[in-house]
Image (cartoon, rainbow, N blue to C red; front, side):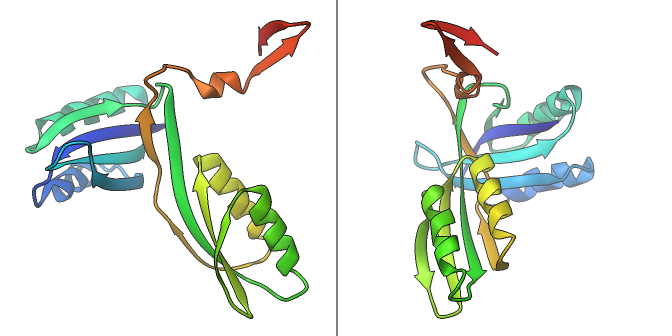
Length: 178
């Protein structure tokens, strides 16, 4: 199962190296990694996606908490959260297919950030499923380059699980959960 970890760290050189070393020693691959400043000066938030069963991830979290400069580690996998990813994708375009690619971009609310006679570059922001879906559609054309940020996430303070809401149907003014 894929887990999402949110790690608060002090901005010190070598922190990311110690974290990646811990993962390497234990034979873990980090599927996605995003690092950036957090809400307090001198603190960064690392969001990473890692494959593993619950027991293994619990052990990994304990090991992370023992590292220097780690302030907090949270497994946010099953918590109601907001997830976003950014992708830049450059697609080769022949004039006869350009309108199809622009239509796909419009449906996914992607922005065209560069255009030339031979290519279009799109910027897509959204949940990882949206980013994956547009990439799959554009794979039908000639994808020249892709750059992705990796998933970032914050826990929802409202505790509303939007994944659960996607399964809600309404019948005769009654809410039914699938």
